Image (cartoon, rainbow, N blue to C red; front, side):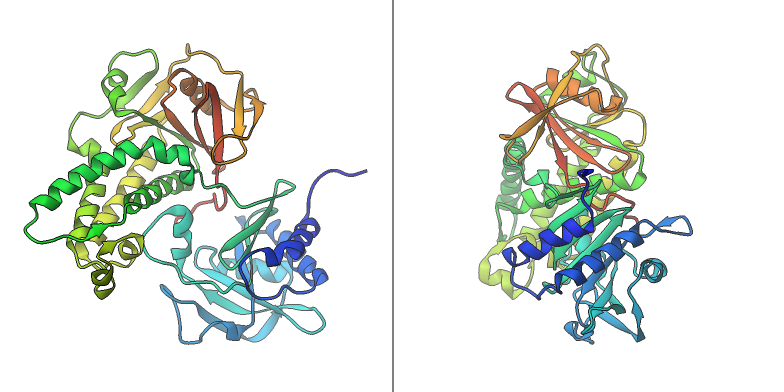
Length: 438
């Protein structure tokens, strides 16, 4: 009689079968060794270290895989133990604290008999988190070896270098997390906002006394993504949960006045301060175009893109990036007050503590999207979710152009909108949902 639950053995079988489907890289160990590695890591994840969860990253690679002279922020720094340590749950537990999840990996290899050992630590720095949490600066490149991330009790993510292959959690094996920020419909929703910013940027360019570099059309799209990632990561870190409501700019006056949809307890006065996000992004665009970006590389290309933004040493760009970071944390703090944070698609902050009217039409069923486009979905009942989610469903049912982002206390994130007269939600990547403050 089967329970239908998946465990490390099923995860190992999938990884063994599909390892070569991804980027070329190191060979996997024999299947029994892989099963042993994942099972030991799984057991370690169930332990507690002085009431702290045991979370860690490990990489299956020999010490000489990593140059001895390299180190963060742009390289990987390996430190070998004088003697290898047996790979076991009890030995992993204290090392997990020393090998901070956000900054280091435990180095593991196996001998001819298949015995697994921990040979040392690999310090990567925290930049690798920027892909999920947002931020400037390129991360050191991991070799295409087996990487295992333990993110919580019974939660395993298996990667080939930085490429996620499969995850194990809640008793099931599933694929890489969905990045809803890449959804085509979301890009369409904010296309007008990006076009408006480009017009303002072009006006500043025309008034400049010296020539400016051109910007990659995708640059502000990527900056927007990282800005939203920072907000979501900061809200997750508070472990309180929250709701962000993004509305068309033309609805501003209606929602700030007496209306039947939202009651904003703490509305902000009109003016530049509540539109600071937009001001900062336009300022970044102008500063990048006016600076020398990445030196000769940019001069040859005459176009500044995301790579140049990451690597720019311009003091103005660095200060603006820090300002965006602080705005993200401000919004996260506002979300800890009961009620929703309300913004326009221009990222103008209208207010917080917003109560969604209880007399809105009650939604009893919604669609869970199975792909980014929303063309494949499964109908679910709403009775299994809390008030925060149900009120967002109701609002999106009545206001078809509204986007709601609901962050649960456990770190899960749902993007909610009306799609073809059906309220639909997308589960956004929920990996690494524990506190990221480091």
